[in-house]
Every structure is written in structure tokens, then in C-alpha cells.
Length: 171
Image 1 (spheres, one colour):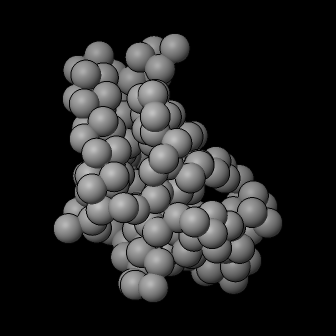
Image 2: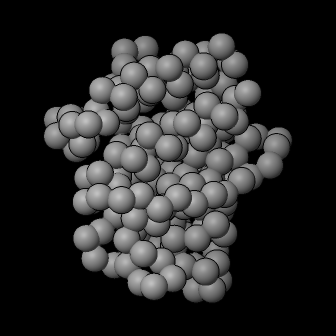
């Protein structure tokens, strides 16, 4: 099932990188929670694909709609109105909100983007994905990437990038 959601070119790498991240989380004695929109839980699915992942994976929140971002993660309506769901401001609040829910998590990653095929604009093209990372007691960061390809390719690339961002925050 998981492989049908991933591009064939990236499926092996995604499984491998998620296993490496789990080991890095264990070494750092860290726990991760995800807050996902356009990836629809793909990052959490990759992590929990591996047996024993529950020791470092707190869980995943799929907040696809703006109302879910607000009610579950505490993203402010003003943030969504002013900047939109696909923005640095929103993913920062998503990452921070996820840490607020998962009390034992030390790290969080959030993802919000435009996977396509429609929904893009001149300012926010299809393939634009914003990522947020937060460390309990530390800072909350945001960065964006634009990925090429169809919906499945954008989502796969975004999941891979999210895994890499968490690994960076463990260093």
C-alpha cells in the first residue's frame, strides 16, 4: 500500500531514509511528531512502516483543511487569512502546535504545500511546499522548496525533504 503512494524512483530511498532517521532519533533520545497537510500523513507512515518505531515516533496529525489546522494545531485564523495555508507562518504554527499536543515529543515537523495538479498561482505555484521544524525549548524554523513532477512525485519529494530536515535538527 505504502509503495503505491510513492514514486517508484524514490520509494527505496524514502524507506531507507526513514529507517536512518529512526536510528538518529534513538541516538539523540528524541521523539518526533508530524503535522502534515499536502503529504497526508506520508511522513508518519514512512516512520511507522518500520517495526519498533513507537519508541521515537509520538504520532502524526493530518490537518488538511484550514479548519483542522486551527482546531487541532492552534493555527491562528489571522495567520491563514493573511498568509495562507502554504506559508512560513502557517508551518511554524503547525510545528509549534504539534509539540503542544504531543507532550513527550522533543521535535516536530510540519508540511503544507500545493501538490497539484491544480491549485497553484503565480505567487504559489504547483510544487511549492513549506516545511516547519520545531525543537522543544528551542526555535521554530520554516523553509520552502519547489518540487517538479506530478502529485505523487511532489508528495514523495516533500516527504523525503521533511525526513532530512528532522535529521538536521538532531545535529
